[in-house]
Length: 466
Image (cartoon, rainbow, N blue to C red; front, side):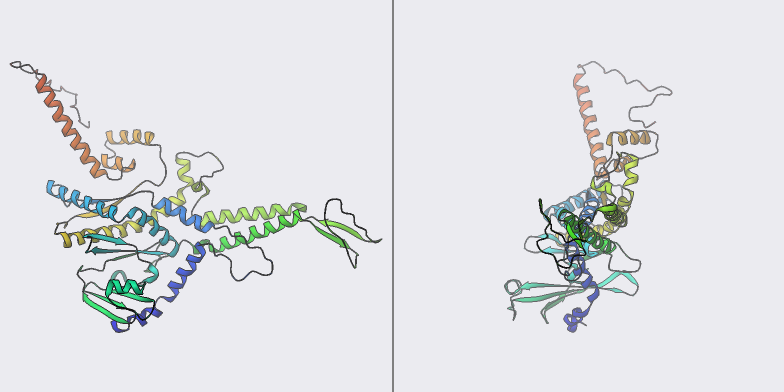
């Protein structure tokens, strides 16, 4: 198959790639179908872009990678902490906060996204990039879409870039590069020629391909745009029509009855019309009879439809018809929260796989042992909360043994409860050592310190959760 790969990719997934182009055009505001008819007015209000940007902001409101130790031993905890620090350095070196946000928007538009994890030989560090899924092709085994055994990445480079990277001068100004990855081999194509074929030094395919939202049993995902494309087009048409009506109402049309010919008939202040006997003239009132209200009601109905089917309530944009707080606001925003949580489930799997690749690559290239560790993703809360009230509630639940301290921290939005608990324990040990030192210094030489009173029946020691 490798000797015909460029030809194979030329016709592969053509419908998927066509959808990508259509979605990108729509996101950029190309909503109208076909050329305009005559002097047809075409207004475009790009709510589709606003909805995509809004859900992206909510989904990516806060993300922290964490590493869990294999057991509770000090050595395992230390290895987990070192792995967490290494992951954070990779995040900082690759500016993953910005990259993840851009990739999330791209994923919502196209329906798919991907990350590529490789080793930068010159910089001696892990590189994380987000290749364009319009150039990605994947093969999986049978009906198991999670078992990917081959990935091809196609992109274009200029002749100068190809010469600098690979020492080859293409015949044209640009060249098509294809990277063909399997767990065992890596093949590089330049145009229609195999440039190199080597063993895969990583031992795994360094791509994480994931969907925006998944259709059951389908590998490629679903964009957020198709469901709102028709209402968006209809909204543009209705507003364009309403705009035209208002324009004509401001420049009224003169209607002449029983007049065969007309000259010098113009609507202007102080204009005098000379009309033959038996004729009638009047101005056409397009707003008569409440017709304008019908157009406005229809536009409002389209707004409601778009908010409903996009699962982005008006409250998400800062506008509500009444004051809402607490549980009422959460109920109002529930549809957006549920949509963001569905996306976060998929993103969690993708980000964990990416982090596992990073640690595995660091283990290969630096010799540091990260085996036996498990990675996870901690997300920030989606909605603003009354922290003081929530903290009081969690305090009661912890004191009554209904919540653990870890659970309370999670509910309060602490991004890394494990690390925070360790810091609290360390701080208590440090403060305890400091208090003991002060007590020893305050005791006079030769004078015995008073014995500590033993708690009696019904009393609890300091720190006892009873």
